[in-house]
Length: 162
Image 1 (tube, rainbow, N blue to C red):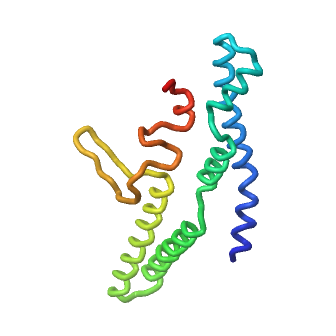
Image 2: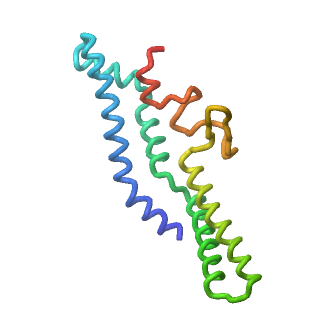
Image 3: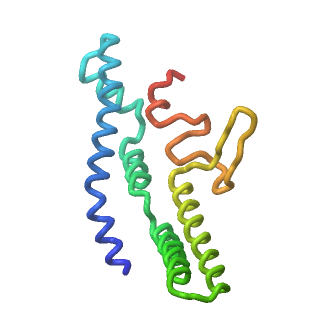
């Protein structure tokens, strides 16, 4: 089972790595062009942009990890909730006893809500706000990994003149 998951991960990994590399290259190029617009040479601009961006390889690894999204635990949880959903559907469809229909309904609710909760967790949606109040799911107490304490993306941090 683990070998199958590793094969799936390896198949997905190159497109994610390529996408992350292109995105990082874009941000470094934008910073380079900004420095060139200020009068620096292209070589100096590139060096300064890479230095300002920080440890590119560390950022790249973190972005690939975030982009891959599915860990083994998430895969297990989704499988359990999906089995619960289908088990509930089968009980509802194939069994004629009324009491078992209620069990099927409960299994379907557990499966459906569990899948939604895992999706919300993966999306990083932990705080929902309106004009008058905010609601925290309690999944984690910090912002998603790609954001800092002020809610800025890595690119926003690079562009900020602090």
